[in-house]
Image 1 (cartoon, rainbow, N blue to C red):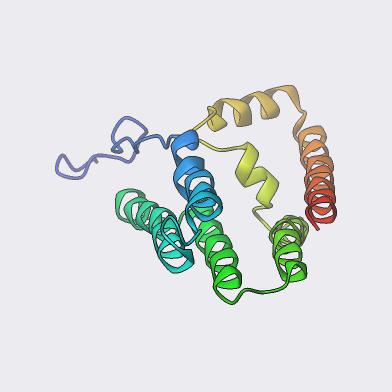
Image 2 (cartoon, rainbow, N blue to C red):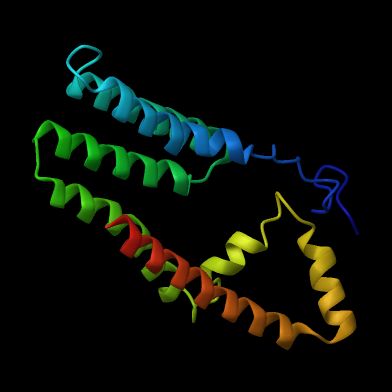
Length: 177
């Protein structure tokens, strides 16, 4: 017997989650802060400290907005905060160029390790990135995989994609350094 005050949880009964704009996400968390640090950190403009503060404001505000709106942490905001903080901090300390190279290589290295570390978990990072419900109809894909008996082949493809993504991050780290 169903309770009229508590309808069953179905896709139509659940409130629709607002779809995130990936371009806006990248702009606020990576592109705009990078431009601020590179173009406005001179003494004639904002200076290194104020450029750092303004640069950090973008991923911080977007991350807080996303946390309030979607009730989950935004990975790009976290990466943006760390990256801008490290770059700005190294700039304030007038660090040697070697440390900037290390920082530029560290971010893709961390991603490579994270992708590889999640390979044997219940939710590999590649699966989370590729099977994103805000971009594709995951239940339809799941039904098609079951109907065609191709689940094993698909899982093998995701495993291969994990290695390719890990390799691309590792190459990026080497080239960034």
